[in-house]
Length: 289
Ligand SMILES: [Zn+2]
Image 1 (cartoon, rainbow, N blue to C red):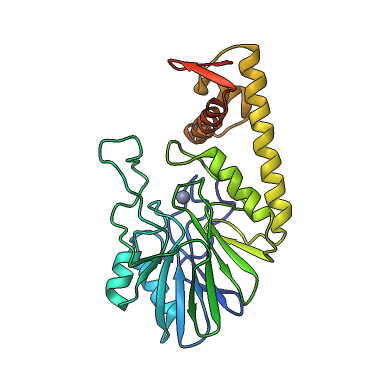
Image 2 (image 1 turned 90 degrees about the horizontal axis):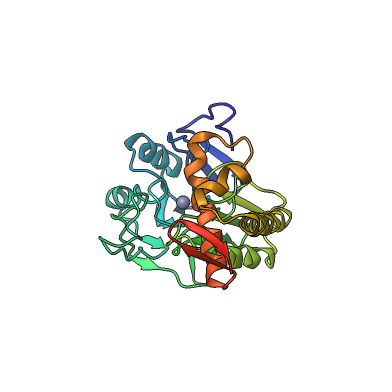
C-alpha cells in the first residue's frame, strides 16, 4: 500500500476497450492511489458516465471532452464517498443527464454513520435495484449490489463485453477499506463471495489498473480476510487488547498514515466476530468469549 509509483496523466481520455474509456481525476492520495478513474461507456450517440469523481472543474471538463458530441444518458455512481459522486450534480446540471445508480445514504446528522467521507449532496433521480439495468446504444449496465465497503455500494456489469465496474469493492492495488459502522465486514465478505460466483471477464475498479484475472483476485481476497480474522482471534486469545494495539502486531511495515485505515479494518473484523459471539468487548479492550 505504498503511494503511486509514478504520476499518471490526468485529464486524458484513454480507450481501455472498444466500449470503455477512462479519465483519471487529479486526486491522488494514500486512499485513492493515482486518483479516481471515471469511466465513459458507449461509443455511439449516447454514453454512460460511471463514478464522475470529485467536484473538480478540470476533471469535469475532461469528462465532457471525453464524451464529446455524445449525449450522456446516465451518470452512474457506485457509492457516495467523496472521491466518487460529488461531480454528479454539476455534471447533471450541465448536461441534463439523470443521476442513476446507488442509493443515497440515509445519514443521521448526530449518529455514528455521519462520516466525513460521505457526499451529502448526492441526490439520485433513480436508484437501481439488484439486477436492474440502464441501457443505451450498444450497451447495457446492470446493477450488482455489493454492500460492505459502504452499505450502498453497487458494481455495474457491462453485458456486451463481460466487464464489471467494481468501484471500491474490489481493486487490484489494495484491499477495500471497511470503515464501521456503515462499512460492514460480513456484508463485504458476502459481496466478495457473490463476485466469486460470477463469470466476469475483467474488472475496472475506480482506483488502480484493470484486473484481468477477476476470480483469482477475489478468491485471494477472501483468503486474505480469513487470515486476518484468524490472526485477530489468535492475538486476542494470547492477550486481550484494543484494536489500536492489534494493528502493529498484524501489519508489519505499515505506512504510518495508513494506520487509521488498518485500525478501521481490524475494528470491522472485531465487530463481525462480536456479532457471531466469538469475542466480547469491555471499553476498548477485546477478549475471547
Ligand atoms: Zn469508497
